[in-house]
Structure formats: C-alpha cells, structure tokens
Image (cartoon, rainbow, N blue to C red; front, side, top):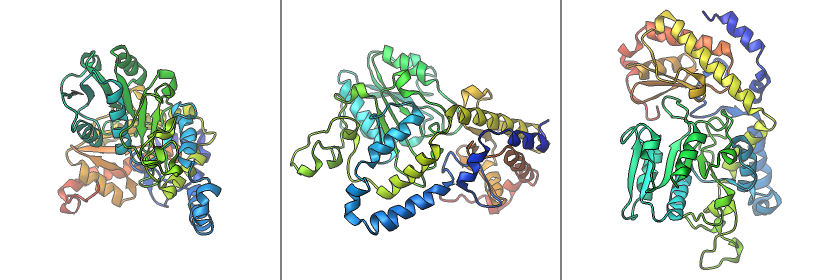
Length: 412
C-alpha cells in the first residue's frame, strides 16, 4: 500500500521540487490536465507585460526590428529544438498544429511523387486525420492506410507505394508511446518519409529527432510546454530536406526577400521557408516565457519523475477499494506510455465533472476515458494521493446518477 506519508517522502526526495515555485497555481486546486493546457509560468506575466507595455506600447512598429520580433519564430525554434533533439536551424515556431501538419504532408507528397499512399492511424487525434483528408483534395490517385483499421502492425502497411507516414508519438487518449526510432527506420527502409506529431510528448519525454533520422515533426506549445492557451505550434524539418521540401502555403514570411515585395514567390533558404504570414507576436512571447522556464532543465530528470508519478497514480487508484470499477486504459509498463494515465469508466464524464467541482482538474475523452496529464514540473506525489481520495468519493457517491453532472459542456 502506498500511503500519504510515502507520498510525502517521495516529495521530499524530488529533485525537481523547486520548479513548482516557477508556476502560478491556484490555491485549493490539483491540476491534472497539463496534457490539455499547461499551467501559467510566473515569468510569462512579466514577459507578456513587457511585450504589451514597452515593445508594442512604446516601441510600436519599430519593435519588429529593435525588439527582434521578426526573427522570433526561428530563435524560439532553436530553443525549442533543444527539447526535441534538433540542432539549430531545423525548427520554427509558427501557426497551429493543423496548419503545420498540412505543410508537412504536402511537402512529403511532393518529395515522393511516384508514391500514392499515405499511412496514419485510426486512433490519432482527429485533426491529424482531417488534415490528411484535406491534403488529398485534388490529389488524384491517392489512398490511405490506417493503423487500427487496415492492420495493427505498421510494418504490414509499408511498401514501395507509401509516400509518407503521419503518426502521434503519444496516443492522446491512452497515453500509449510509440517507438519513434524503430518506426522511422522501418518507414525509411520502405522509402517513405515520416511526420511525427509530438503534441503529447514534447516537454515530458526526451526526444532525439536528429539522432533517429526523423524527416518532419509538428507539435503544439500549450500543453506540456506551457506556452499559453492557443500558443503557436512548431514544425521541424530535417536540414537534409531543406532544399527539396516545398510547403504549399507560399506566404510572404517564407519569401527569400519579403520586403522586396516581388509579385511572384521565391522560397527562402532553410527552415524559414516553412513560415507563411505574419505571426502572432504576443502568442510567441508566451512561448518565449516557457522556453525561459525550460532553460537548463534536465529532460532525463523530467522523464524519471513523470514515470514515477504515473506509476504511483496507477497504484493509488488500483489500491483504493472505491475505485475498483475503473479499468486502466493506459499501458501498465512505464516505458510504453507518455506522461498521462487514463481510466475507462462508463460514468467517467460525470466523475470528472464532480472531481473538478472539488478542485481536482482532469478531463474526459470519448468513449468513457477519464484522462489525467501529470506534469512533472509542478505536481507533487501528495497531490496524487489527495486527488484519488476525491475520485473515490465521487465514485462512492455514484455521481453519474445525478443529472447535474450529465449535461455535456461545450469543451470537455
């Protein structure tokens, strides 16, 4: 049995405990939803205030140069690249995840013009599949193969007809973690390019995009990276592809000479060619504050605590007599999951809503998945113990029988 005293001892031994003080966390709240929206870094308030009051308020248009707004997407890309194993000049922070997926898909399709199959997964976050559909509009002769629909083994979906593979490193429902190195190697052996969606892994899992030979990667910055609600996404393009990869959204920020105002498009060199139009500077400033927070943080230490938090949370739930109705929907082995734990329960939506009412914030995903994203920077082991006590209370009271918790809110 894991007791609260045991959890307190784990907190006392936590090598990352000082990081909690870097976040503005509401009193009386246990936040288990870092995989949807990261908590507010305290430094973001000063960074955003400076951007609004000084750079915008006083510098006005001069700040595009004086405050280096124009180069912010690349500079942040280099800093974020350290967290995902990318050397400088291969990541740019821009746009949204969906837009960046589209860019990568169309670029990969053009780089493999004689191949007419795209591979993805049925259980991926829906926007990945939606953008896959969109990328195929007007692309004659293409078809798709999906893990979970056409086969359960990626190796059986790969052959000399596959142009590109789009997969999520971590499953957004279950937290299942894919072996990026193995799958990238398999895809390359078949002559295909790989696009990795890192939305649920960047910031909590040490990633080595360059070392595994990744082609493209995309992700958001508002989950475990704590860049703020709707913060800009990012795209990684391996340097070896910079000359041949051409993305379809030829906006002026990707032009070789944007202030020459030429009437036809000439892509610039390097990763900046994956920019489109004018970027949201205030959104980028939120990412800048997040990167300040991550400066010097050991990603291996983050991963160690993440695994321990998830293991402890599973044990606490499974040892509690009032939580016996819950079924673990995440892999049990730590090396097979990201930094989230999910449980399957028919009344899960009501339980999550009732938990939130008591100050324990998780979230819900269809069908019946109670999902908890455990951010190692600010979560304590005692938080998990207390959260499970609240969860058990909601289950004991059978809150799903109360109409108060049955109505679905717009955002779940």
